[in-house]
Image 1 (cartoon, rainbow, N blue to C red):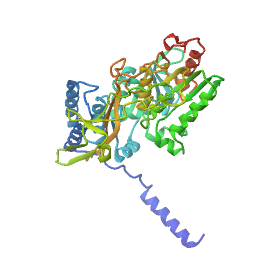
Image 2: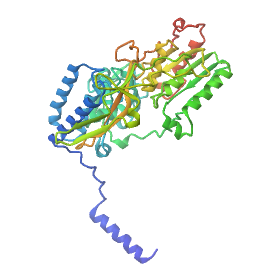
Image 3: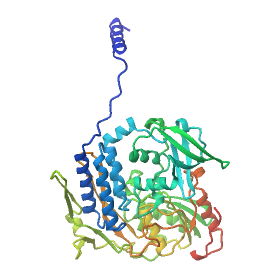
Length: 495
């Protein structure tokens, strides 16, 4: 160590003593004027109305008009992009289009991490109630599995409704939002919709049935340690429960995720069903609980290995037009091309001015080989969405399989997804992603704006989070021990 180095070190130390510790860099500003907030709101409304093929598929004209009026009243008091998000997110959720998303800007993300204050609980939502998974800070001593009855005097029904408004749903399905609100999901969405809260009044029911109330302080973003769990594999997996009973987990239909693993969805499924056929399987459990969809037509590929005869899958696949355009209050024009020249050749112009897909409406042009013809039990959940929900709807339509678990997260009669219009709002930099294709099945859902319902309802339990072989799996195994052939003959065993 040289004298020069010592002099530099001493000089630096003296500077620190005089100036004090270096302050953390302040997050970028998220401030908005009232005029800027209004401009972004009106642009978002215009884009949603211009892009969605049928904005009134899941709501009435009156309810949309009332929702817009309410948002326009609220935006008058908006002073930053977090407050605008809190106005705009429930408005777009009102459409009942689960693929319609609103993403925060980089500045808003940075602001949330630096200054956000959050509920110090990770939660589990189910039809049986809301339960504590983990507590932090002053809530660290609350045992896992404690039932949450209320926050700030609001019961769990209000919390579920808030999750549906803050996360978006397909139709009026609660389970998709309940799955997304799990863990730290609800704490984050609560902050985004309500802003910072200093303390929370909790009403809890303990394991011995006692009802207690506690007040706990909010925590910062980094006061909740990450679990750092590995990303689960997207690849379909086959296990054998006995010589004639197979369990097939299909967690994704995404070609992108399969390519990242050096695999192909179609070849993977083909190989697995060839193995099922070689071993002469009699029974199959198909697990779609984690399947949030992915790439068309992978749901049809899987369907064709379960049902021999192709079916008409879509009554129509439609878009508003070849290109879309809206103008904001400052006169700036925003355009988006839906179909290029090659894609346009596959569309026909309807009398209503919309574009309709010519082909690709069948489940598959020809039957697959091999086709599994044995007994089928399908595991479903609120995370079963998009293409996963479509497959569940197709199987329900042809009465193929007994369904176990909870209502799927996607509506039974179709969805609006496919191509998206990613529009960055000019002032807040919030990003609106509007789905542009309506995929409509030729059958009606058993309940309007709801998903496929389980024949055997088995809500996920807080003590089995992350376990594939949970209560629903055990019910599926028990069903296959019964002596039934037709689906209508199966009887639900206790969970």
